[in-house]
Length: 213
Length: 213
Image 1 (spheres, rainbow over the protein chains, first blue to last red):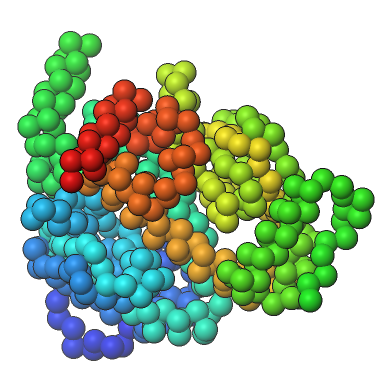
Image 2: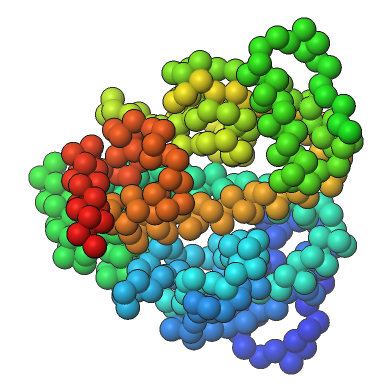
């Protein structure tokens, strides 16, 4: 039985308690960590709840935290000529790390914004190093996870080069159908690299083809 | 002083000897490895020279090797509706790994082709595991390298979503000017996600702007 974090004995907010339960469940069921590993992680991380619209990271800031999304939705965007250009979304059970800042020591060139009220498990760089010193097996697991992320980004990049916007939209519909329901259409259009009007046309065309077939 | 590999005592091909020298130089000057580490790597890897046009990997094959480019140029492409769609190039001093195959155990969905005669240092998955068992420090270094790669792909993906083809071309010109000279224009166009005619127009426009300014 996992010993829950004792850092917030007077914690009353249900969202935080739910988030900790979600985190424990992921570590037990998905990552299949041992009780001792889970307890150590719980003591080194902090759960925090952010309101919709909160910026977790801004351009020019140093990214030193690793986030794990327990509930909610986060958007990554760049500012280009004063316009927000969305390049990623992070849903529940997804890790948001900033390897560019941590490997080059340069400040962030993008923003992380909560699209919904979002509960995050946050671990600082120092806490992560401490964790890996205490439990080296977790460093090997984190390397495996990084390899999966690398494969994912290589495939995503290839699909952006190869596919047209309609194929990209269909791909999101197939692989992350929830996303299409949860994010505003102008953000989804930006993520697909097109204007909102083009996304409307694509959706209409797909709808007509579905009815016709 | 590094003890060179004794695996090929009768090796006569200069390209292979040059490639080994290049590899040793990278490990000494760039990665700053210790002599013992370099000697261990040299004994576990194999240098191989491939003719222009050789496929190092094909769709459907299992990718079990990690390549390090000592001289030459390799292209990654996907076949879509019978058409080759280039998604990356690997020049000297670059690693070509296939994390998708190794993490998911699925066969490759892309091709790796030598655009020029290419000399590679090749390490199998088994040799890599052996290396990390013998020298755990190198596993930590490889994790750092993977983090750099992850940051690189995240940035590349963002730049593909954000930038238009002309900006992408200017980006390649600024960051990898040699590439523009070394690869056929139709492959470069494919990599930028455009038709060769569009690339010609972009180049003409940039040329005219340079002359006018």
